[in-house]
Length: 127
Image (cartoon, rainbow, N blue to C red; front, side, top):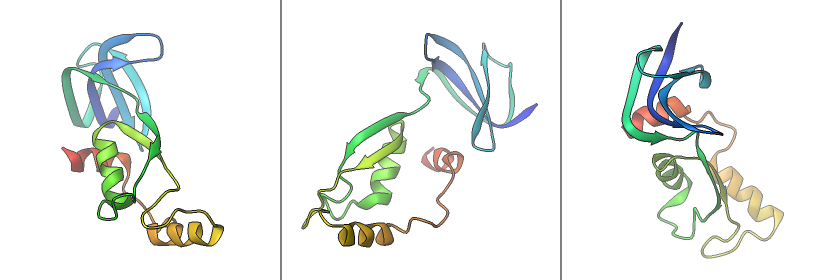
């Protein structure tokens, strides 16, 4: 099988670390293989001896404590650091998100519901 993306490096798995490859297609991990050259892909990200994590979760992020930063910049910075999921905290300058109306205004401002770039597109963009 030819994958959309093959990622090579020191794979940090649930119970061990091994040098190997991850085959990704359709934004989903389809295969994990020990060693090098086992998987074929349209694109290859070879991280050598660097660690490759499945993704980290940051449960305490302030996207708007600095109003110039915002959600998009915070998300890109998080992804560059290996964070695949983040939870924005309710305190925003100049006012905290402490009422449903304010929360819904923030959701509208962020544009949820429109298509966001895929993780593959974001990874390639960051490189």
